Image (cartoon, rainbow, N blue to C red):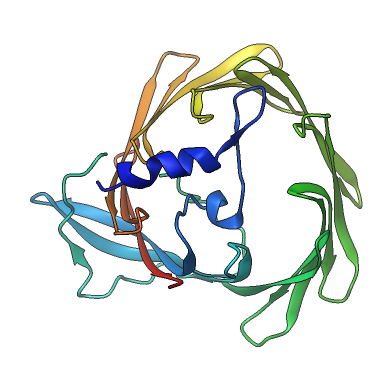
Length: 293
């Protein structure tokens, strides 16, 4: 798929903590993007399969990302399209590829439209200003950093009222130990512990145990409610590091498997991802990517 040429360089940029978990090194990296991306338009569809051809049925939402030269976000524009049909020319012949960085976010809680502008006030403070279709401020998020570590996050309404405040603690190896979100009427807290090749996440409702492969990617996740097992999930990746299969086994032994297929551009970024969901649904993710020279 053309990924092997840059994979060694990519691997050299990946930083691993002592627990073996892969560490995100840039905003591009957080989206699974490689190589000096200037902008990316990403659209999500419900699709159907007809005679080995994928036919787009309904456009769900679209994101438009813009990046600075240093791989930091410049802006993100989000649009939702609930129930709107795909255009008549949206038939894709999907090639056989190394059959997503992460599962598709099918649940929507965002407004139908918003524009997020990133202001880098200093090396330690980033302000996200979120506006609606008329340019009116919906909310503001203040994030404070120490290097790449997010220390705190405060969310405000458009009128300036504090909605929530989050805090994060790390150990001497820069591994996350605790995250806590405080609201007006309560809070949510999560603790993290580490052993070789593993991370344990303990929350108020569910606990998770993660195992990592030699590249720092999650290979297995076991979910518990208290100490009672809920599900076990296995993850498989291709040579580019993109997720190609996710298999979940619940406590009754039922197996649900989701498979992903990709097409890549010359920059080794995928431009088409087809998700064959365990529910029988097909989802398509299309990307249009431009690069800095």
